[in-house]
Image 1 (tube, rainbow, N blue to C red):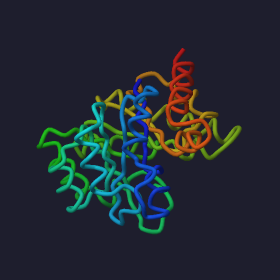
Image 2: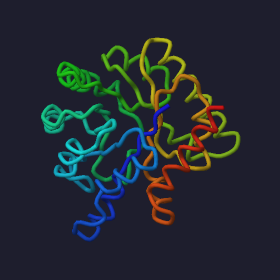
Image 3: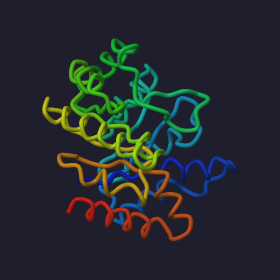
Image 4: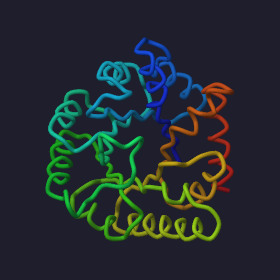
Length: 239
């Protein structure tokens, strides 16, 4: 199981002052030293954290999987086809949200997303769809033509007790269905050092994509150690 580390919030701190520090590329390098198998960045339409220059530098200098999260819009499709990341993850995007609030609305935007998937995959770049843990969304992803999905674990991460157990069951069912119909399956959003082990224990998962909790821990102990801690927890969950 791979660990993709999202370094968006290194850029968030940088943009707070408008300078050059901290550099998300340095954050990516330290994450890789700590054992990250991939680096994720989300180039938002409003450029609130990651900038175009960050993406270009990451593509040139990151030797592990570079996962570009983006909206399924013309501007971003053009950027993806030019930069050619190792993986594109299509995500919903709202200007007012603090972070991605849920999975793609595949019913409402099926045609738009299908066109985006085809345009990107026709150039040899695999596409993952960030979806809610719902059987209908898993089936729709297959119909759209994506080769991969990332199951949204936000509701699982934000709940506790019995409610969390119910959300975990939804995640497990969605992952099983996706695997059964031939999709590669990742998971992510809201995962942290307290809740990741139960997700890591799910069989068949290709990878986990985690950002905020790792960057938050890195503020106190450093990026390398923060990634190493997360890797240990993921391995422990798989046992």
